[in-house]
Length: 499
Image 1 (cartoon, helix red, strand yellow):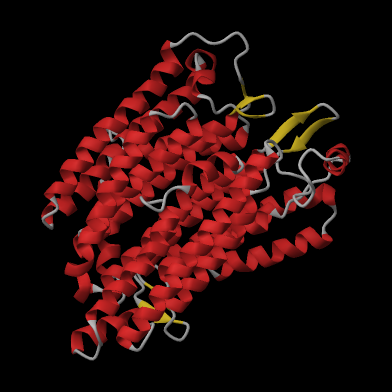
Image 2: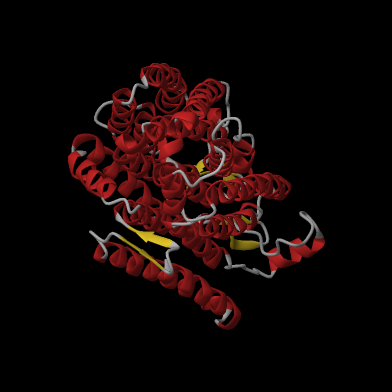
């Protein structure tokens, strides 16, 4: 965490003092170097189980696994950010992030900035700041630290969503919508913190559980309402129903690398925090909270799968797919301690496949921007078989087809839910998966069995995109064929959850 946040601060200084010609390379080296060092630090702390920084951060197995996933996803997102360049009529190639986010879209000032090849590389430190907040969020041992981490990860994302050069108005709308709804979710979270403090007299997660078990806590209704409102703040971040309305619009309006980062990393951080709140702070309230989580999980799976069928835009389809996957993940969270390991495995598998899918979207371009209409992808399998094959693999993993990571992930969370009496959740999950498979297969048919249009989109898969897509495809297959090593690691991590 310290390494990533420190690198973000250094990145701000790079923007201020390094010449523009060398700035992008300096940011790329700094960002990837810091993430490599952070991953080494996470591996070096393996087996730790402690609460540090005056009791505000928990360093345990769950924290380290989630932070490892976040570091890997962030590195992939940084590579996609570096790949983003587009053709422009007045210059050879320009950065796909807007040169001046504060000017009016389409104005003369923006045109002059493009012609002058102005670049704004603050996207790199903003990404690192968001990643640092994400790494702190699931490690938080008290609710105030968790709230600070939530804001640290959210504020950079609000800015990043509005930095797209193409479709500026749509990008700014996405940023504003994410900011306004995110502010509401933060208010719910803080209100829940206040109620939990009134319930237990502390904001420490372990202290809340101790107060409930010792009988020192006040009215249990305060505790249930407090945990429910804190959960609302976190469920907004994962895009669970009914807090999902921002997901398709923000995913579509944000730059595709930012969307990839949000879709993969935010879910990892928020679900990690949700697991810590429910398992560490609220085991005594489990019976009262479970019906709410059941209702949210069922609604999320059904709405995500059904609405995705009607989508004709690849990014919006993936957005509703992410909503459905939030429901599948909630089936593991509902299982309590029995579902921690399954949830960790699902988060790892889903994050990698999602990053790979959006990397493919980055590569398929039309008129200087991503070609997101499904019918524009017709015949991609004949023009770029490797890229289309990788995208088909990711879609099959999302559908939960055997020999992919998605099958093992869904089997693990469904088994955990079933062991805790969640048969109804499993039935809904299986039916939703069947519905979801229909629109995944529809896209595969378009890729390989539909003739290309007269002016098909171009494929701009540079080395960065190739590395991200290839690595994600390998991991997706490996976790489907040989899942046991990661499952064992998740089991050991769950056993080391600091309380």
